[in-house]
Image 1 (spheres, rainbow, N blue to C red):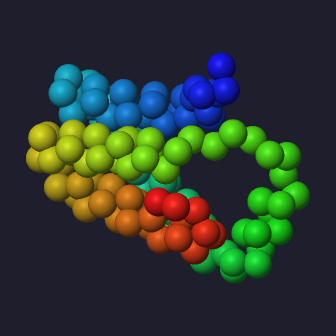
Image 2 (cartoon, helix red, strand yellow):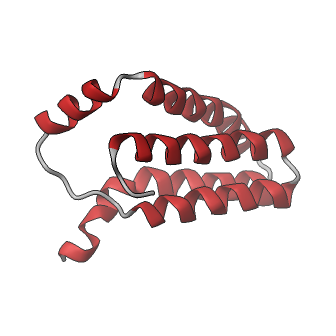
Length: 116
């Protein structure tokens, strides 16, 4: 199943989107706390990724074994769903944070030469 072999690498992304949906639609306290902690962490990781020099990124990617990566469109869909959920729930700070995460992800992909 080479066509879906990348699904193993995105299980966490799918699970996080599911928890975001639960937080917005059902509103249990544990899911709300997950979102409040996870979102700034993701934002920080995206900023950190952009602050690393391009040469370092290329060297680190070249040294790793080739693994199947999810298509860029998958991440656009995930970030779009997350953003839509937060708009639906009127979590405006999270809307801004996830819009920034999405924009930073696109910037990073362009920087390293991926298509996003």
